[in-house]
Length: 221
Image 1 (cartoon, rainbow, N blue to C red):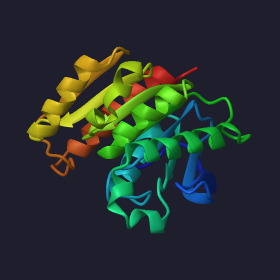
Image 2: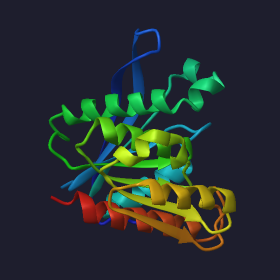
Image 3: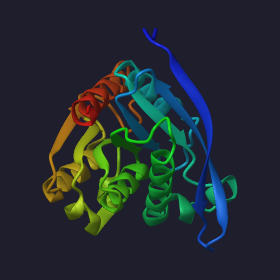
Image 4: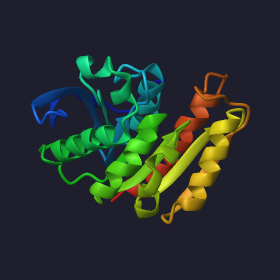
């Protein structure tokens, strides 16, 4: 993939709070095209991290639409060893809120329209975080479990796109149920033949294209 414009990258330390109220730092990578028309924060799924090749691929596609990205670890290395943390949507949502507030205070990203891209359990965390941070204008879920957001769904105001693989039948059914629960602008996009991880030829490319179009539509000032 060849970019027609430069993308500046920065390593970030994002301040957050642990369950015990102790201060911690989350590690992230901020990438900004020049100029950036919006910023998308990534919420990875269970067992993943900011190094996820799938999320990095999607981020590169977003850069082509002049969208900045922040890929960061929702949990510290120690926290990630506890599987209960990995599926704690409330905790993950709190970490996303901390990241939103941090990047909103940075001179290079302050004022940029914000979006959230969630995969697996990260999709539910993105929906929960958007309720706490109404500055979030758009959300994209890729192969996500937005149903885990439970009672928060009806309070979501951000425009939400649910992208699901056509062969991921169980998750597709859950996303269809979520679509009926959401009261915001919403859409379900099914990628034919794709399974949960979008590993089939062209599947991830299609999911990334759909995400870029959704964010470009809703985040441009």
